[in-house]
Image (cartoon, rainbow, N blue to C red):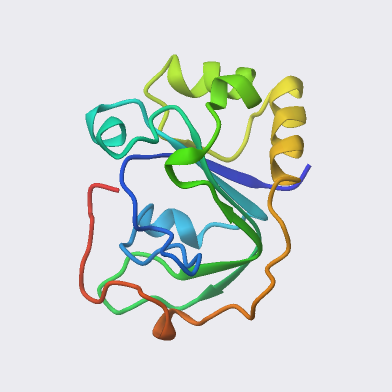
Length: 155
């Protein structure tokens, strides 16, 4: 299995509308780690609930390309060969990946890249197939809608 970063997200806007991960410096230095894909799932706290994506599959990116971030950032901008953003319309993680949902929502786990059990690995593989190939040329962070100088250090 490829190396997949799965993390709980609490706010919209990162990745941005062009699929650039890191615009608000979300997940900071973790974006610098080596991974083959990212799955963003909605947290279950107040902020995620207020945005309507609590407990839901939010976005998937496969085939990352990293570009240097702004000087104030803790990690690079990341774009993907395959990408899908479900927004607040994503399916509940408990319905499409019950083992992963149990692992993430029964603890204070924030992100994970290693140590997935067999059933979790099978669910991850199935989820990654949901991300279609990008139809348009990937934009650079400079041409995307990334916020300049705005950091969400709590991400």
